[in-house]
Image (cartoon, rainbow, N blue to C red; front, side, top):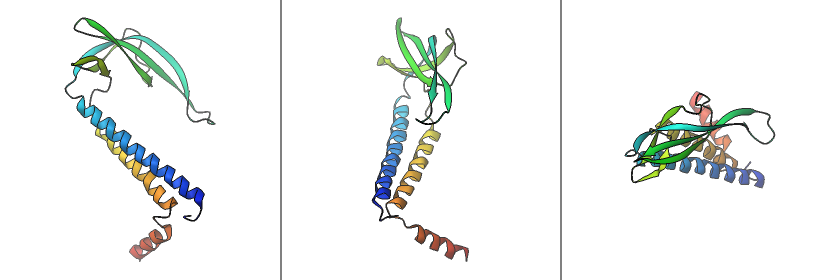
Length: 155
């Protein structure tokens, strides 16, 4: 596989995707950790837009998602936020939920209330899978060598 330029290029693309997953999941985790001192507030849904999302260009798989527009008040000033593409269909206009906002800049807000290490772990595992296949496609890891190691261990 290593002698075919197509597989080398595909391997490089897989490596880049793997690196993207590592950077994205790590930066999301760090961002959530930096928001620990943010204040909680109650947000009220003021608008719900239902729409259909398709997965992929050629697939016919569709799912219904909702964009929620909400308001929250800090020091008698009203701020607006949006949650895009949520699958939570239970929120209607007038319903409430908790958000966090930056006390130094109340217009900065998030609906992610706690740091979730499982997303970080899933992102890193996913990236290692992509990088592993990239190493195979580029010829850095040889499949025959892996088979020989496996055979020696099972004998």
